Image (cartoon, rainbow, N blue to C red):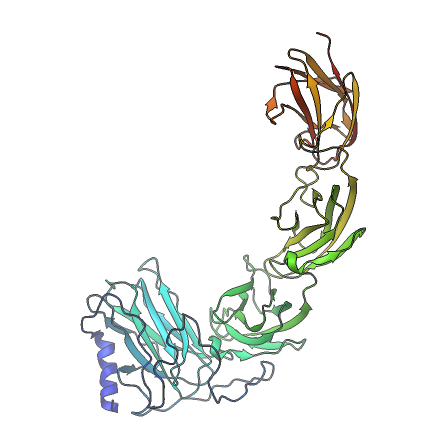
Length: 549
């Protein structure tokens, strides 16, 4: 295309370019060929995001702490060889460009522009469009940005795309494609030069950074623009991004190579000017996204530090759990990152009851769960409404405990320091099923039992005669208030039987059961969440006897 042809394309575009009819939907077109040495299909098959790796032959980049980005001034005309055939050359400005899509809408339009160094470009769509697809490529055909942009209303346009960190003097191309078969007309957009930008918005143009105590200073030159910095990580290490901003409108994120957000910090109330986000690495390259929204024309600096906090203190799966030897009374740990799970493998004695509790500082609340080997995690609190403990009866020689926390603030992550207390409550005194129940001999008997926790059930069996009444007489458990265990009568198949409960003043309570037939029945004692909140019932003595006919 010669110079005259290219400027004639610009004229047509500004006046409302009408394309020929196309199909209803079109897959992403291949990148335009800039010269004979460029592979048009270099990134075929790559999903939305960026191509892996960097351009071959590129020179090593400086670290973020030493980069000084300055605008190199205007760029000249790229010449006939610089703009690929089929692309319309644009000069970034506030000019509104108008497109009239053909019926069906499925024809992509290609555009080109020459980037200036250290500048920020916005692709802005005017109100009226409900959505479009865009792909940006550099001069080598490498995809730098790819997005489907949507809007729920024609009154509010889709969000703009932010492009910065582009190579000075290089011809960049992008295409536009409507996202529906009946696009609204006309389609209007602007490619605007927003001015200086010290760091790129695009993953492949991120500034390299090395975690250290050395502070990094940047600027939020434009509203909603971001500074992207890339850094190498070590598997299972925790990284903290802490920043101080000149105003309370900001956001911090960690991203992976697919731009998936993995750690976020912001102040929903726009009051705080300091924040910290954290992430636990799976290894490889990650990105720090820093968004310091500027309220004025003159941007003010922000300061950030990226620290490697080292390997997390405890594993997050039963396979990677920290072993806790038998007899250990307490274990310390830290909730170092959002979603952190610390798992411990307790050495225990089968048949013993255990209670594990925690004390947590620095975070709003914690949660503790336990699991038998190979089983799911669950919480079994010592009593109702107390989430700071879990209880279990060991069935094997090992039992898992999981600790998690909830940060107190969304703006600044604070480490949760905790101590786990492990209590061996001893061997279970009575079986907790009909098969392991303790038989009651004939005649009046005193039943001595201990309800160690909410998971402790003590079961007795007795022989009953049809029509006879059987009474259980027990004292109230007094510990600041009256408490008693939950009691049910069962038949030999475990079905609950009818009984009556009598509360005798302030001292004792009684339960009476009338046998519907001569058979074996059972008594089951367990903790009652409703009548004994906050209390472990412990040792109790009750009198059981058959009443006179």
